[in-house]
Image (cartoon, rainbow, N blue to C red; front, side):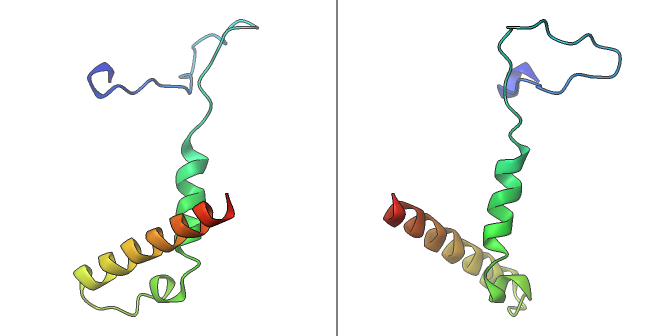
Length: 75
């Protein structure tokens, strides 16, 4: 996994806990889950009105652009 620059942050069964005060990486899974929830907020994507994959992908790109513009506008 080192060649992908991924640092595992969940210990495997049987591994010892990190000592107190040692720095650890925070969990990153919630970022992906939150983003997918934002995308699912668009009805056209949630119900998949578009039969062709390229049209569906275009709507996902549009939704991401709208989400990003809203977040930048709020900041």
